[in-house]
Length: 571
Image 1 (tube, rainbow, N blue to C red):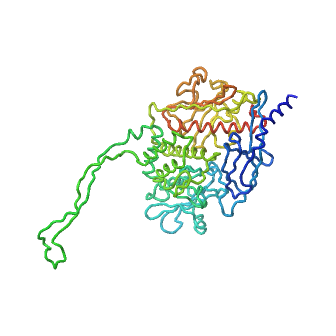
Image 2: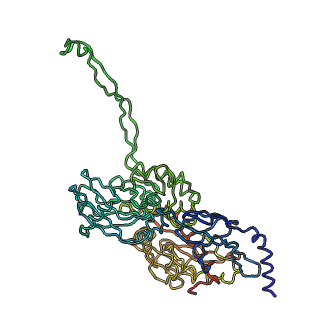
Image 3: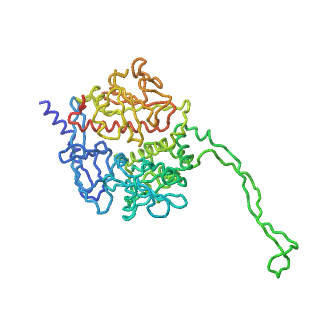
């Protein structure tokens, strides 16, 4: 009888919602479409033909891009009832059939997949102008999705380079030249649009000393023509100055103040001075005037100018600083202003902007546009860190220390126990890019590779529970030396950069660079995260860290919701 009473109570509570629940949006599309649903606390869930969970969106509206096919969406609601388990159900079902326009863009695969595409590199004089060129030939199959297809890096007589989409005859000719074992290709999202760009390295070895040794080729991204590069940029002194100054500023916000030097630059005016009198050419048929005029420079004043830093980087830092100060509300105008400063060295706009200042859809894999903007800013910061890491010096007393608490579930739900949520936490201990990496829980002392997150080899070592000197439900992540954000003066596994009150046990490991632990408060179980460290990129850690781990917690909660009983699969 109790079960029947619960069902009646549930029906009484949700009946008004069921009457108004509706997903609105097109039934057919060519790829891009918007769906809206009635309740902001509900989720839009995509499911397959068997009703299995595929993905979800929060809020009350989602902009979605899909390839050919038919897609099913549910409005998903959960209620916590007194003296009962939670009830989750689908309010409404909506289907969209996508028939893409012939020749139109294909669904963009996420950047980590694009970064894994394989290419062959060949060198030779492909156009018979006496200069060595380079073919970067894509051999991976897959869609023309905004990533780089095959292209030729042409060298011109003045030493400049240009990446071009080859015509068929050029490509056939270029493929007859030998493979180059001297060149290196590094994928990395330089302009933060969510598409993998290329850094072609060691060009001097095959092209000669007249060209730069490293050159960036940008993916088409969201451009209309996805089959050719968006553009290119030399990694020259100006690029290095820009990224180095910003990288050091991300590490120490006093960088510009400590390195700007004031100097006095003379300011001149120009005028014309005319003499008079008899000159040696006087009287030659009146062809030449007796008055001889010439320009005169006059020193008017001295102007103070700033030297010692890249001024575009200084301007960019002020924009980045204002966006980090309100990271939950980044606007298009903020990103556009930053993109204009960056274009001086990148040669193309960042964040999906075209030259007219219109921001196209980016590809960072987030559920809504605001999170896409945040992800783009953080990705841009990581690019700066990566580009300038070789010259970054450690600064004393530069630290980050952030804390985050995310509500996971109510203890009235059967699955909502500390042990169960701690188990889920071992699956979601770090923001790994590959979803399958969350299918296996981390073990104590295990090393995890975060290479795809930043485009470099970034490793962390994780401590789990009492075996690591932590509370039984806790997890601790410490960066390894190969990690781009590694604190060189900080901990190796089992040591501490600084103590954390009430976390850990004894002197073995009272602290870590990222500490995660579920705890109970106010009838809820929450996941607490604390991240801290000394000397190494305090600003992006301090501001970006909470956002990154909040997204990780959201992914974990979605996985819990999608499980039939909410129980951790490895418990």
